[in-house]
Amino acid sequence: MNIPFYIAKRYTISFSKNKAINIITGIASMGIIASTMALFVFLSVFSGLKEFTLNFANTTDPDLRLETVTGKFFTISPKQEELLRSNKNILHYSKIVEERVYFLYNNKEIVAHIKGVDKKYTKVNDFKKHLYAGNWFESNSPNVVVGSEISRKLALGLFDYTNALEVYAPKPGRGDIQNPNEAFNKAALFPVGIYTINEAYDGKYVFCDILMAQNLLGLKTNQYTNLEIKTTPNFNEKEVRNDLKTIFGNNIKIKNRAQLNDSLYKMLQSENLFIYLFSTLVVILTLFCLAGAIVMIIIDKKDNLKTLNNIGVNKNAIRNIFFLQGIIITLSGLTIGLALAIFIVVIQQEFSIIMITTTMPYPVLFEWNNILTVVATIIILGIMSSWIASGTVTKNLLNQT
Image 1 (cartoon, rainbow, N blue to C red):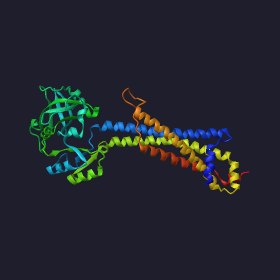
Image 2 (cartoon, rainbow, N blue to C red):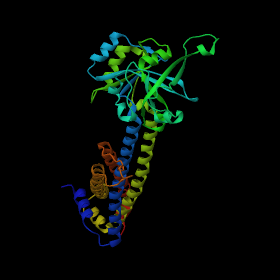
Image 3 (cartoon, one colour):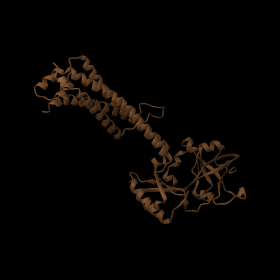
Image 4 (spheres, helix red, strand yellow):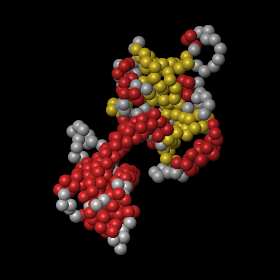
């Protein structure tokens, strides 16, 4: 029989004659339960906020985007297109031409990006669901879809074929400009739809047919600024990257959603680390209470410990008694606290008990990674505090009369 474990278990489930020690031990146990709950709930809430933020930010981002390494434009050959179509991990892809240009409407002006897309764009990105007025434009037409912020600044209306939205783009080439009127390519556009996503995006893009954008920018029909890809569910990103590198060589760079929103991801990771460290500080303070409770129990059981020492139980075995007692208390608090926290998170996730607005529940997300983080944190800190507290069992204590 494992004597230290047996005695530690008895000390844990039995009450001391000293009520103060019982109260201290109870407070330490409740503290572990509460801190475990707090740590898991905080991490789950942040996971929910992170998912909500990324979904909001990634609403228009493709699974993968190809960009040129040098310059602004790259070409795609018919053979490369055939290889893209035959790739088992790629559902759809869309060729994009994008550039910053000058817009003029009724003496009001704005600088924004024109984004020429092909007819497959709405399969890669279901952009039509973001239209709140009008329709998506038809291919091979001068019609465009504008952001709500651009529409507001220019006071644009829809289906107004008497007043065109004029767009100007610098002509490619070198040398001095002799005639300013010949320095720009010009086109007349007609808004047929308005989208709304967020203020930054709504003021950035005007969508048009890709051929119009290529003509405006003086590009060839096989020149593009990027390629947006929709992959199959559960695709192997490493495999797709290798396939794309084989098709296009090293002249392109491939970005996933995280890389397209690199600064946002870094900010969220930093905030997640701060939340974890702050919550862990609460756990550390709680487990100091556990260490104090174990020290008080050691003092209270001093006579029993001397008896154990006299019958041959050595100092290390006695230390293990209180070390194991601390572990038992830690694991018990961890189990109860984690069960309660999981219950709270799942209830909020499924039934939306707490609401931010009448239509928006407070976001939480149950993740197994958070469970592993909480378990590892509580166990490691519990072991440390129990080890420190059990170290107060010394020869001098056992030899005191």
